[in-house]
Image (cartoon, protein in one colour):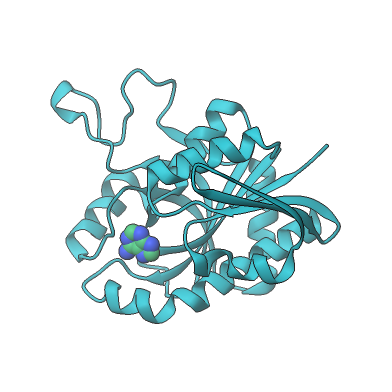
Length: 230
Ligand code: ADE
């Protein structure tokens, strides 16, 4: 039976799930609490992973072991693509760990040595559903693109330009590619939906503080639409 897994990294990013999901049970493992219930008549399980790739990876594996048959990630990110404004939505086509760097041994930036792949493709059907949902809710404010993840809060123009040019990232955040890799290793479909809280530049810390709540709500609006349509 299908069970939709939904992850956010921070309290703001899952707050609307607490409001809208009819929770019937919960359990805690590795310090992460998983809430199970129904949302638009579908079985869902959601949780707050915590920030960064290790938290996201542990969280995702446990989510899958609890029976999630697909994974939606909801939250905020810093925009890398100059076409994106604060509040806009990025739907992941794929995810890469931008801070994986074994270049001294001859591997390209972002490549995970000896792993089958380093760029993890989101599920095409979920990407399409998410993009259509996003265009219904925020017409003209959605982009399908590459999500770059690393254990770094990006906050300068030079890094933004470098990441946009070398890895063609649409946005930067700190969990998506870890979730993506764990889903890939378990053969489970996923998509990451991120609303821009900032432009990852010199104003990022101020913008992040100001816009994270609104951007988190924007991302939830898409999750809400997707779950309805699933
Ligand atoms: N999440 C939101 N904004 C971010 C940024 N600038 N860098 C990394 N993660 C983020």
